[in-house]
Length: 377
Ligand SMILES: Cc1cc2nc3c(=O)[nH]c(=O)nc-3n(C[C@H](O)[C@H](O)[C@H](O)COP(=O)(O)O)c2cc1C
Ligand code: SF4
Image (cartoon, rainbow, N blue to C red; front, side, top):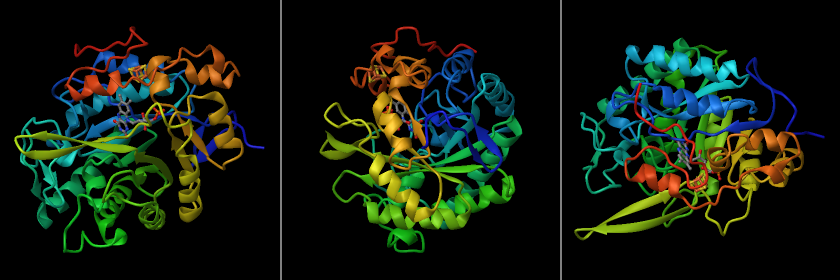
C-alpha cells in the first residue's frame, strides 16, 4: 500500500516522501527579480519536511512578471542568488525545482517590449494593453524559456517546472477562452498545445535527456468558454510524448469579472473556496495520470491529513502538494507525516494571501504573522 512516507525517484532524482510545496508567489524578490534574504528564509522554513519544493513562478523575461517582486531567471546575474536559494532548500533535505513563467497579458505593468503578450489579445487588467504575439515573438519566447531553464540548472536546481496553468501565457495558449488564433498555434486542443510543446522541446534540448522537467497545467477551467477535462487529456498525452517527466495538475477553480470604464476583465482563481471539499481535484488528476502515463502531483486543500493520505493510498496520486496550509503553518507537512494533523495551525481559507499579491504587496497571511516578507537583500 502506498504511503506519504514512500520515496519516489524521477529521472534519478529521489524525493524522500510524497509531499510537495507547490509554487507560491511571495513577492519577496527585489524589483530587479533577484533573490533576497526573505525569499531564502520563506523557502528554508518550508523545506524541512517535504520531499519536493517547487519555487514560485519565476519570470523568463522582465515583462513576464506576475508581481513587482517576482523572481527572475532572464539574465545570468540572477543565477548566483537562485543558487543560494536552491542550496538552502536542498540543505534541508528537499529536492529543489523552480517554476518558469511568462505572465503574458496577466503581467504586472512593469513595461518591456512584450508587456501584454497574448495569443489573441484578450485582456486581464485595465493597466496592461494586450496584443496578439507574432510568430517571431513566439519563437523569441520559446528561446527565453529554454535559456531560463539552462540558468536554473546552472544555479543547481534539480529540475524545472514549466508553468502552463492559471491563465498565464502558456495557459492562455492552451485555453479556448484566450486563444482564438487561426494559425498553427490555435484551433483544437492539440493545436493550442503547440506553444507549450515548443517550450518543452527547446528546454529539453538545453537541459539534456536526464534532467527532470515538470509541467503544470489546468485539468479544468471552471469558467464559461474555459478548457475542459477532455482538452487537458489531449494536452497531457502530447506533453508526455514531448518528454515531460511529471504533470503537476492544477485548475482554474472559478472566475469573476470586474468592470472598468465599460470593459470587463476576468479574475481567475487557482485555489478552492471554502465551499469546496479537500482533494476535489484528485479524481481528475488521476485521470490525467492514466492518459499521460506519467507521475502526477495533485493539489487543492490537501493540507487535510486524511485527504492527503487517501490521495496517495487510494487514488493513485504520486505526490500531494500543500499550498496555503504551508503558508499558515510551515510545519503542516511534518505534522501530517507524524500523524499529528490535528496539531496544524489551520489556514482559514480567507484569501488574504492572494489579496496582498493582488495589490502588488508582499505576501501576508491572516494566521501566520511571522512571514519574513520584505524586499531587503
Ligand atoms: C499566495 C499564493 C501564491 C501562489 N502562487 C503560485 C505560483 O507562483 N505559481 C503557481 O503555479 N501557483 C501558485 N499558487 C497556487 C498554489 O500553488 C496552489 O495550487 C493553490 O494554492 C491550491 O493549493 P492549496 O489549496 O493547498 O492552497 C499560489 C497560491 C497562493 C495561495
Ligand atoms: S492568508 Fe488566509 S487563506 Fe492565505 S494562507 Fe493565510 S489563512 Fe490561509
